Image (cartoon, rainbow, N blue to C red):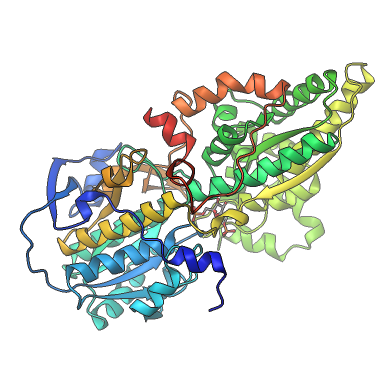
Length: 550
Ligand code: FBP
């Protein structure tokens, strides 16, 4: 493999571990858990993995002989910086348990388990990928693991390889499926444990026991560097409004974190839009007013951050999207009918097959956006919001509004736009020190849970604003994070997605500052991630975590 001088140096970085993982580990069982909601239903669905205790690790004293373990690892869903370090953490963890332990990687995501596609991850392979971004060591995929037939196919290869456990590295949906798999294997005494690891740049897999998902730190640092660069350009040329859409399929954590780091003029928070039940035109008016106010100061430039998931949080759009999800559900008769139509007839057909209220909203959208809403759903049945050009929709609508204001003599400035979408730029970045350490610790934690025979747990590493040696590692039963939600028209047990909390410290701080940031130019230019240098520059994690834990 050709590598740069930076990569060469970075490969030597030894990720930091919590002190409880640095020697012999003692497992301490805490209180029994229950699910966040719908306890009765979840308990009935998960009789073997419900109610298990929280687990924390402490430094142990008696070194005991451990049997070797064979582990299979799966990367699931969108890439997130640090995935390779989770795998190297598992590898080093199981080797420290017993050098005869072996690690197998399933290729191309959960589908690799079902199709029996795997490689053995040996020391040579692992060493090539330490501290690098990407998921290319084994690849990822979005195949849903949820059918018993798939679980049985997985069990065949697990038996062939003598696997004691599978580690599923994924977001809320993948970990939900990991939990279903753990329950199934436990119910048939398959002898294969399943452990989850919290991954997603979106930052929405978090709760009391999972302070953040890995990748969020690095991805937001990369986006903030880019936003800062654009802000500096905007403030130099003083002629454009930059509308920047930021990845994050549902929650606005990425937008909020980037706003806290860079202080742009406008940041939309989807959860606030939903809470205030704002219409699309109210959102547009809010943005246009800021453009007008800045223009009055002679500032015909600015930067606006738009969360990728916004359209689903505008109530009228949410209703429309949910009707479209039902209408165009994969494999349904209606979807087949839709796909057989000429492209030019599709939008009219859709408008005729949804409620009149939604049809009105659908017809009011520019054709390009309406078409984007009808494109293929993702494997979980959701609209692929990353394909919707919300930044252009808003830019065009703000322009129209400003023209109206101009006619009414209320705006005399200029409004030139540039559009950007930052998502893929950050998902495979070389992990920051924080993500390198956090991921390695999550992987190492998984190995300890496996060695102790646990199943249905997620690796949990907490106290993350403290130095890594003081982090608290352990395991949290996945059922603890679950509630019942409607998916594809049926109630299903799923891990509750964490949206931005409007009474949380990060959002409140943002609200206290955004008026000032809107009118004045108080941009911050964070610059690139630093891997070498003083700890206060290289090691700190997100503003979100700092505010949450301060
Ligand atoms: P995960 O939830 O699987 O981590 O993926 C998150 C994400 O990066 C979203 O932010 C984005 O909407 C989506 O993946 C894009 O998916 P794809 O990689 O399939 O284009």
